[in-house]
Image (cartoon, rainbow, N blue to C red; front, top):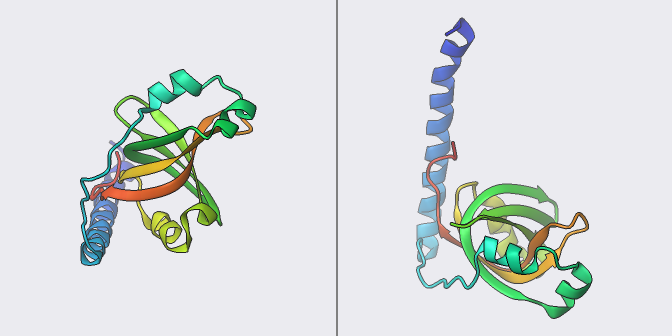
Length: 154
C-alpha cells in the first residue's frame, strides 16, 4: 500500500458517511410528505421479457402501437439534461433505459426525480420506443419512488 492510497481511505469513509447522512435527510423529508415506502405498485413486465419481445422491433412499428409497461427496479444510472433525462432501471432480470421528461411527468414529479439518488427503487409506467441508436426504452408517464437507498452503490 503506498502513501497516497493510505491517505485516501479515510477520505472515502468520510465521503460515504456524508452521503448516508444526506440520504437519511432526504428520507426524513419523504416521510413528512406521506407514505415513505408504498407497497401498492404492481409491475407487469420485466426488462429481459421486453427486450426479447420488442428489442428488435423498429420504432416505426413499436411506437404507434403504444405498448404500455409497468416496471419496478433500482436506478443504476441517471443523466439529467434540462427538461429531459435518461436513467437506467435494473430489475431482477436485466436493465432497460428510461426516458423521463418534465412535459410528460409535470413540474413537481420531474423536480422530485432530479433529487433521487442512484440505488433508489423506482416504479415506472410508460410506453416503449426505440431510440435513434436502437436502444429499447420506456417513455415514462408515471414515476414513483418505492424505496429510498440509504447507502451509495459500490
